[in-house]
Image (tube, each protein chain N blue to C red):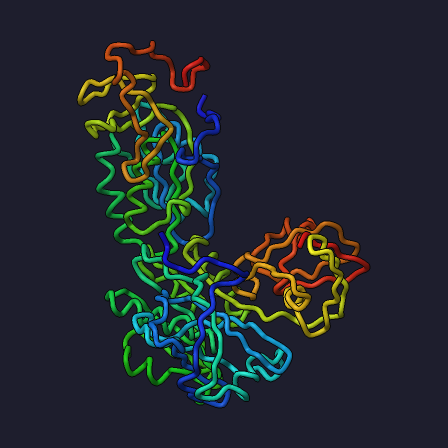
Length: 203
Length: 328
């Protein structure tokens, strides 16, 4: 299952769409894992002739399918961190008219969107499509440490060890959801962890 | 807390001013400068703001919006430049023929519906004719902060190029002039292609120019959010029609040469407004019932709202038909 319908939430929570080909001469596509499917869905020979794909497989085997689309430029990186210098380089050398397409996990899209915003893009001008893992990139509001790929709520901050409640409050600047100590008033009274989107009484 | 006076009536707060200069720039355009009658400084404004000028012409009062084109840092005066429109409803003709130095007038506090997006890394201005006015103030503002800007300004001819000399003298490397009568045209496609990421384009000019810039930018892959435009529309004349104002319990007739908003005001009903040119959304009015066709001309309501027949912007839109009832 690579598509997931996120429940509607507070206005802070990012909402993702479906990638659509836009007109223009330059297209930058950044995807991880199942995010490749969104590119495969939108790809046409015309679009690919002007596209630069930066792809992080995360153990999936979509890379050959993307390469078979014959994009103008194609890069496969092991991690986002390894790819970010390339993303910055592309943005530095681009002019207005560049279209950005992001697909895959929320963490990837959030961080790539942040790079694009620093380069001068309005966040609303960047296309996104969620595919694959529903794990979140979380920031601990207490120690400010980032914990990647959080699937359970509550979870333990990988930096300071506090028990954190997963909020839908999102920071575009940090590209992360906010995690808040769940047992501050009654230390040790921590509800059992469950999947972030699992149905239950505590959300 | 805001120190602005509390609003008692519709529209922005008023300022009593006197005319301190009337400067003809060319055959069509004249600049009018104002000072406050109480000797105080004007409220600050940002580039792109407009003021609504009250023109008392016999028993008729016109309220027309004009972009403030003076330096926003100079709070001792406000200046507007008015292009004479011989075919228009008479506001600009009144300014040109009747307004003299020393006259007392009333203008509103500034309202900005066309402000600079200061997050942009570069500001690219496209002006057509009298559309240069908001950019005069924006340029003064950006020059103070060492902002990155560039102006492309199309005029009919050298003789009608308002402020061309001043702009090209002060900013020879940033200002590009195109004279229609010399068949000089902007290479818009080329211009849009070379702009750095984070550039915002701003257009002010004739409707055709605004559409052209939006369409060309969109085709070149520019996000819609990076292209801003302003077009004030004057209300167009049309066949008289009758309107029932339900809240006020009045029935009025909108004359051929007045807008629905003006007719509502003439009947003594206080209706909200700001720009009076179809842009700001303040005068949005609910339709209670209608038997006929709307002539929507605003930039505020979307196509679905226009088609719904549930809302009208009385500053620029009209109605043709049997009956119209408004919640006003």
